Image (cartoon, rainbow, N blue to C red; front, side, top):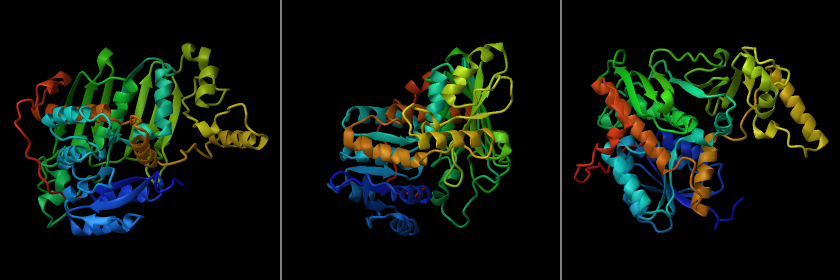
Length: 431
């Protein structure tokens, strides 16, 4: 356990559902100590105090938190429309910042935050895109970069729910903030942003343009965000991400139908990966499929050895092979007992009796990674560029659906440039 002097002293701003979830994970992380929690909504503030391990002070105004000299870092889990204002104020107060996605809400905020963050290179800014911290996704990205899937040309992703978000009756609009455009980027910001970031990562690029359709067909409760969306992003070289989010069915046609709601498929000329980050109750998982054909047979054994699939595969099977994590890969210096355990686990994986599992939830990895970056100055995996590229995709995707046209990503350079100042609300209720 790190000594008290090694722990990062932090505050969590926004103790709604997401903030409470982060506090539950932070309670098991020794590299940071929670000194304060903040929310304008008293019930959420009370729940935040209960979820925190270190008996922090409670605040209703985040500016009082930022005024504390002992607080080195803040974690922001407030509604999207407040992200920029709080992040800006925190950076100007000299704090390191972890902000949940989407990093910003409006085009002018993209430009303003980039300029501010780049003027403060000694302060860490990390965005909450936890797939970047998943061992499965990291290995998938390595496989893509090493050419193990051939030329990756397409990705498919979905986040389907049944039902989708429901209106909290008799609550003000701010408490139903996800459902109104003045506060929210809708399904694109709250769900698709995670998977757009995966595509940016796997393609090692950003889209050229996006087109899509969004509509409000089912949830007739006064909201004005879409309840279903379909988007197509084109990347350089004709590569594409096809994305859907709906509110009427949560079937996931991956992993043999054993999971629901969300997942991605990375498709290349020589293979595919089905992957999902999972949740606390369901672990992340990833399956690798060979693309049938003689090209694959020549190198199947080499590829299987890297990814941990069965070495006896011919490359013609439709079966998916579990991608092995480092704990199951042979290093060559294992003890007899450790080697036998690995053989046993791999045999169980090959029979479908068990599946590889990450040692820790990616949320734990991302939070621990943030504190490490604060202590060492190491650039976060989900850094400013990652966060702003993701936010840009959200903003332009919603524009494409609203205006029913192809929106080019170069358009962001002119959007919001003439805005004179910002009128961000200083009040918020937790996510």
